Amino acid sequence: MTEWLNAIVQGVLLGGLYALFAAGLSLIFGVMRLVNIAHGDLIVLAAYMALTTVMVMGVHPLLALLVVIPLMSIVGYILQRLLLNQTLGNDILPPLLVTFGLSVILQNMLLEAYTADPQKLNGGAIETASVSAGNLSIGILPLLTFVIAVLVIVCLQWIFYNTALGRQFRAVSDNQDIAQLMGLNKGHVFGLALALSLAVCGIAGVLLGMRTSFDPSIGSGRLIFAFEAVIIGGLGSLWGTLAGGIVLGVAQTVGGKINPGWQLLAGHIVFLLVLAVRPRGFFPRVEH
Amino acid sequence: MSSLLEAQALNAFYGDFQALYEVELSINEGDVVAIVGANGAGKTTLLRSIAGLLKNDAHSIRFNGTPIGHYRADKVAKLGIALVPEGRQLFPSLSVEENLKLGATVGRKGHWSLHSVFELFPILKERRAVASTQLSGGQQQMVAIGRALMSNPDLIMFDEISLGLAPVIINSIYEQLPQVINQGTTAVIIEQDITRALSSASRVYCLQEGRVKLSGRTDELTRQQITQAYFGVAA
Ligand SMILES: Nc1ncnc2c1ncn2[C@@H]1O[C@H](COP(=O)(O)OP(=O)(O)OP(=O)(O)O)[C@@H](O)[C@H]1O
Ligand SMILES: [Mg+2]
Image (tube, rainbow over the protein chains, first blue to last red):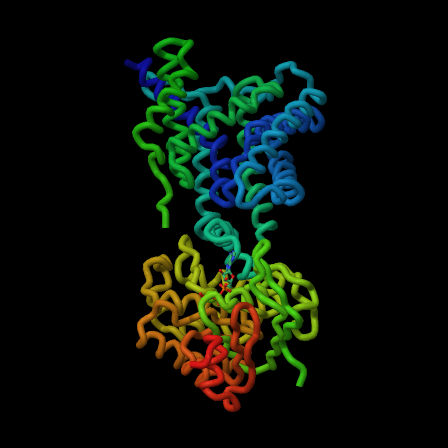
């Protein structure tokens, strides 16, 4: 019994990481209907950025966030203004193709710079520390990841619904022309949206790199998890994204408990089941 | 007096389709100009061109002497031109108050603020927290007007403010119009109702199939002339 409970708890905490993968993807889809195929590779890029920061500055990976988050945001803003804005229009194909190309380019660049050897961010004692609750032993790092995920969602939710920036995000999402009429430069607003999305990728990348080893090829796998979490939770809902991440995480750990080979498969099956039963996810944003 | 806004040989296109032909227009400061014309005449296209939603030759539109035909809509807005679009087009994800605040994005100073807009339309203050989709048509139109005013424009353009509204509501909105315009604002109104256009405007332009068929001071034109230009046949 405890074993199963343990699997579920681990799954919930893992769901926090998946929610972090997914939040940035969901955010830019909501603001500009852009499906970013390179999202997973950008998370991996952030992990490597952290690796370099740790090596150069000799700091703890969590402290490297202070470098990684601003750097990723800048990359996001520039990427959007110089490249992705040119692809946005009535046709959804160009942004898909361009971000797919970007994904390939990023993987190759990382391969050139860091080789295919697996790397890991060394978090030190925090990686093995745990707290016990009853019969359960809960790792500090997964717990911290989950708490950060919740905080990130709270933060994004607050930005979206309580700030001028959030108002601008929602306005361009509703109607780009009219938003432009009100004096908003949509190219700039989109740039800020991708900057925010990549800031979250930065956090996700560092936590991922402390949890498991990574190499330049793992981006597409993270993209799949992010997609699944977004779809399960319902497009356009941030809290839904957290719920989606948790469902996916629990499915994987429970599946893995039944048979270690089933871990990923169980996640995909639950995703397909949700898609069959609730095609718009658990918490779809209300259509106007 | 030099004009605030001028259009010269303005041609506008949707792809290959030409919607405006060599339109000439001149609006002086403080004017209320009415644009009339049948459905599809190009009235909305004209306002969209001025507002920057349609790209044109730089010199085909001048504002205070500056060529702005090629400006993007957000740059035009910053210069002080606001459009109350056809069909209101509020942001459904934004509350009434948020819609209004978004109108102030350009950050131009002047008479209009959340406070003065609520004074003009008190009902909006009551409903400030409500999603804009939950308002009646007339209230939505008030938000659309308020949102445009929030930019403290020098020129405000109304595209069919009466569309789809009950006559009582239309009357009350037109009663507010002088208050809106008295704040030193110049106005362009598109109005299907010729009588109303003539009574609220000082100048009128009649469009027909993308061309200006007739223009002049409202007190110098006869109703019959306008009707004829409107329908393109002797009425
Ligand atoms: N987005 C568009 N794409 C292609 N053609 C368009 C578009 N919008 C308008 N048109 C065409 O341009 C012409 C002028 O349209 P416009 O909307 O400016 O007319 P209008 O005078 O505002 O008419 P209404 O009184 O119906 O609002 C019409 O022939 C219309 O079919
Ligand atoms: Mg029209």
